[in-house]
Length: 91
Image (cartoon, rainbow, N blue to C red):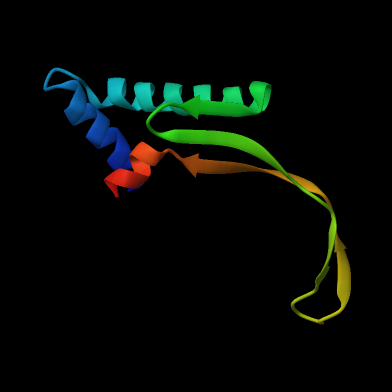
């Protein structure tokens, strides 16, 4: 499912009177709220769905895939998602 399909799904869930624009605004608002929560609190927990949180990756040695030479990979941050048991059970 891509973003456009998600918007269509939200629109149909909102009822026949909902416009596509209202559904798009709702999806964007939720995604922005999750992004801001991760940025500010480093963790967003949605009971029954899962948890998004910032994960720190340590610096490490890797290899250049083209030349095979060892290279230093800098430390970085990424976002991880852990599904709730409710979501896992529904799969």
